[in-house]
Length: 288
Image 1: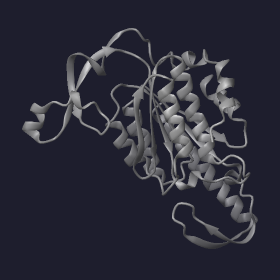
Image 2: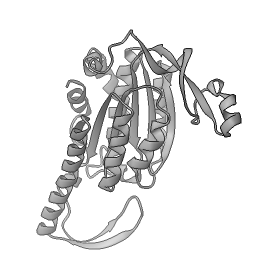
Image 3: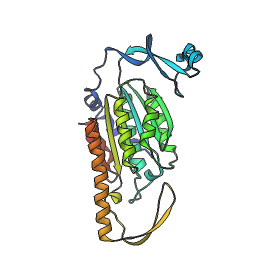
Image 4: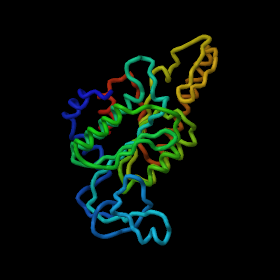
């Protein structure tokens, strides 16, 4: 559950959101971005949730596929947040803060700061496909609806960032700030594809890896039966000190490759732990 006290803390630091995005959005300039306006600039494929009034029926008559018109409008800040809602995020060795809860708090922090600046945010959850999609809007009602969704979501299945990034790119109407939050426990090729696709659709990308301390350093040892949260498969393993060392190296290498991928596309990468106070983590992220 998202702690309301977190937002009370954020009120004292609302000025930091401008610092965080000042290099991405100059604001107040006319720019050919994709929103509601007067002059049509181009078209894109219709996606559920788009304004049906923007559908161009002449194109449909020629192609039998739905497309919407895109217009020239004032350039404003839009933030998009993608958060992993797979079953592996439903994990905690402390019994206090699960990875999804921690990631949802970070997502809510971004949403709150953007709304306080009277700007838009959109959000989607993802597994092997996009789940709940919230189109970009302004206002506290929009914020409360998103928080309610995060508080009530059911975690399920595996993840595939590559596929979901491709799907989500079709919903993006501007060159926004995109925040991706996940434990990234999936095939690296899919992660790399997803990060590259997202970077092509944005002016700035923040990638946040959420880890439980027990994942970073295995807390168990001996002959054990392990349960896969995503597939529900079971496997017996003997966890020896040498096994734990090999595991740690492979996990560190996986995260290092994600960091390198982010460096390639000039995305900012953060690896955070669920045993750290959420406000301290969030403040570190937005203060860069």
